[in-house]
Structure formats: C-alpha cells, structure tokens
Length: 597
Image 1 (cartoon, rainbow, N blue to C red):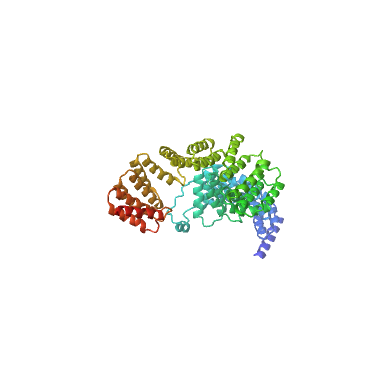
Image 2: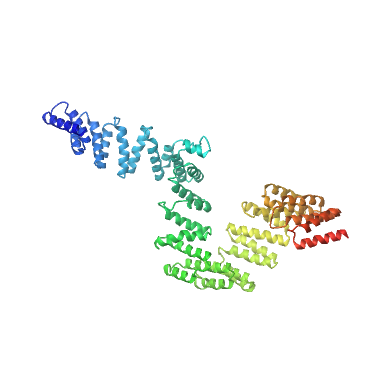
C-alpha cells in the first residue's frame, strides 16, 4: 500500500534523525531501504544502504545495492557489488543469487569469459538450478574456443540410445536431448571426427521438433560432405537451407561453385545471377563466379552473344588471360558438340594464336585435333598430334589424346597401334577417370582383335581398380565369355552362374544367354538347350532380343542332337514372335526348310 509505505518512510526517517546513535539504527536503516525500494526511490535507498555497509547487515546491504544498480541500468557498478558480496561472504546465503546475476551481467557487459566462469561455478555448486541452460552455453563457448576437452567434460555421458526407434514416441516422450545431440555433433565436427559428427547432426534433424538450428546444421553437414568429396550430398543439404538464413549468401556461393563442378549449369545460373548483382567486383570470389556464370550460359543456351560476353569479360578483367582463354575454349567445345566442327576449329585457333602462352593452349590444340579426327582429316590430325607431343610433353590432357588416337586406330582396324596408344594413355596420366577409359578401351580392342587372354587379364585388373564402376556387370559378363574362347568353358559357366546370383533381374537374361552360349561353343548341346529354354522365363523387355535368339540357338542345338522335330518347334517360335528381326526370321525359315527336306 503506497500510503502505508509513505507513513513508514516518514516514521523511520524521523526516528533516525532523532536517534542517530541508537543501537538498532542499522536495523532501522535496512527497513527504511526496503520501503524506499518499494516506493521507487532507488537513489535514496542506496544512500541508506551505503551507511550500513559495515554493520551486521553487510551481506544484505551488498545484495540490495547490487539489485538497485541493476534496476538503474548501472551494470558495471551492480557487478562490482555482487563481487564484493561474494568476496566478503564466499559461502553466504545470497551466493547463488549473486552468481546467477553476475553470469548474466558479465555476458551483457561483453565479458564472455567471466560470464562462462560464473556459469561453470553455478553448474558445479548448484547442479539442480537451471543447470541445462548454463551447461548448453558453456559447451557452445568451449567448442567455439577449441577447448574440446572442457566441452567433453561438460557434455558428460554420450550415451544417447533411446528406448524406441519410433519417431512419434521419441518426440512425444522427449526421449532424446536435442541440445545434447547438437553439442556432440559440433564437438565431433571440431575434432574432425566426421562420421560421428554426421551421425549426431542427422539424428538432430530427425528428432528435433523445433528446427531452430536446422539451417546451421545443414550448413555444417554440407561442409563436411564437401571435405569428403561427396558433393551431391553437400548440395542436397545446402539446397534445404532457408533463404532467410543469416549466412545465405555464403550458402548460395557454395552452391554455385558445387553446381559448376557437377556440371549442373542451370543451377549455376540460378545461384550466381543474384550474387553477381550485389557482390563487389573486388571480392576474390567474383571473378570465378562470373566466369562460371558465362560458361554455364554457353552450355545452356545456343543464343548467347558470346562476342559481347567475352568483350565485357576482357574489359572487367584485362589481365585474366587464363580466364579469357577458358571462355573461348568452352565456346569452341560447345560448337563441337553441336557438330559445327569447322567453326569450332576457327574458335580454338584464336586461343592458339592469341593465348599460346597460357596454361590452356594445350587444351585448345587437343580439341582442335579431335575436330580433325571427326572430320576424317587424318593427315592434319596426325600432324597436330606430333606437334602436341613435341610442344606440350607434360600436358595434363596427354592421356585423353592417346585415348582419342587409340579410338581412331581401332576404328580403322589398326588394332596393334590402338593397343599401343591406350597403353601410352595409362602411362601418361594420373587421372583415375582417364585410366578407367583407357582400360575400358583396351578391353574393347583386345576383344575386337580376338586376344582373349589379354581381355581376361585386363578385365580382371579393371574390376580390382574400379570396383564401383557402373559398367562392372558388363566387364564381368565379358570375363565369363572370355573363358569360352580360351577353352576354359567350365570356368566360364561357373563364373557366370555365380554372377547371376547377385545380378539385377534386368541383366539375368543376358547372363543366362552367355551361359547357354558357352555350352553351345563347347558343343555340349544338351546343356545348351537346357540353358537356352530358361531365357523366356527370365526375360523382360531389353535392348536385345534375348528370347528369339535363345529359341534360335536352342533350335540349332537340337539340330546337332538330331532332334529335328524339337528344332523345327524352336525355329517356329522364332518366326512367330513379333520381336524377332527379319534376318533372324529368314534364317529360321531356311533352317526349317532344310530340316523338312
């Protein structure tokens, strides 16, 4: 009641005035300060409290003085009074209140390390009092500072196994600490324990209902995936970050660069365009983004005004000769893809004439040679190949050029020269993708030349070097077929039967056909028939007519077994099927006529 407060204040002030030496004067001043505070007269209350600072009420006086200065927004003075209180009464009754207030005040004053120190004392001495709130702040602080051992201590038990895998129950029963998941993710991230960090980040995204840190988590995951070279996963997470995220321009820039690496030129344009409008040209990333943006538009659009784009780039970056050369080469490559080979040669000549001192001149000559190969101008192409090897002995596209040369020789039936070229490609490159192509080319030319031992050896090497290659099943089927040509048919059959067990359903008919074909080549016609007639049961629609072919060779096998009626029945199946080609139907009819006559 304000009226009662006023009366109490007047009474106490009157009493103090006439009884300054009274033994209870400190008690009276303390009571007066309480009423003054309640009445909003904070300065007067502080004055009374300062006068009893050395009395038996010292502890309470310090607390009230600190609280008054907080209310007056005098944070530094308030913090000093709280510190005096803690110094004078280290185990006093107001210790918790003082520590809690100091933790907040020091944070507000920008003294983060002091704030963290007080929070740590609170957690250690008062484990039940708002422990989680301060604990989370401490963990974040220690991780930020790289004090990972301290962060680990603060997180404590890392056992986060929940009672159930049901997401509904996990969320409803709060079986997982989202804060702890995020803390452990960040901790492992800072320790470069990427697998553990990703596990905790993923769990956070799965379990967290609030989603307040989702953008931050996805950015962290994206950066880990980039470091691991898993760019597709990085893009997947970065794309899900909200465009109102504080650091979204960084996200957009990263997506633009990753999309360029992945040859997703439409996305390069999408992410780069808004950045280039706002980013200063002095930004180190600007030149790369601008160059990639032009290249993406070359790739995506046939209507780009390249001369104007190049002129503007030269004006903006007159000293970037490498970048200018790259743009011209990309334009020349694009014309090559549009089958404008002569125009491509003219464009690339600009690089050879005006940018011959750049690191990309060898690339320009390489694509020029490819154009001449395509135009069947072998004399010009081979002359330039000689010039290339002489001028650029250490070029990083030497392997690619040997592969192109080998393919040309192979097309001309010059298998020995092709083999030498592909072997040279393997010796001249460290690029795994080029090596993969070289081995694949070698397998193909060995097959064309009928060098089946070399096919088998090279195919097995390919499998060891590139165990995850998309063409692996084709290489393995070829290994099985190679055994037949080496008079090791039983090995081939066993190999292919094992392969069939792990192959996709789409490839089963082809493998089954290869098994039957090996028996046929071994002249084991009884076994061949048994395998051929399984194919119609396995076959789905494929690029090759496995069913008509299997019926045809089943018929031929029956012929060799002198089972002419069965042979005719098989050939009739070939003729009746709509998926049999005309040549096969004609041959089947001829076989029937021969058998009947």
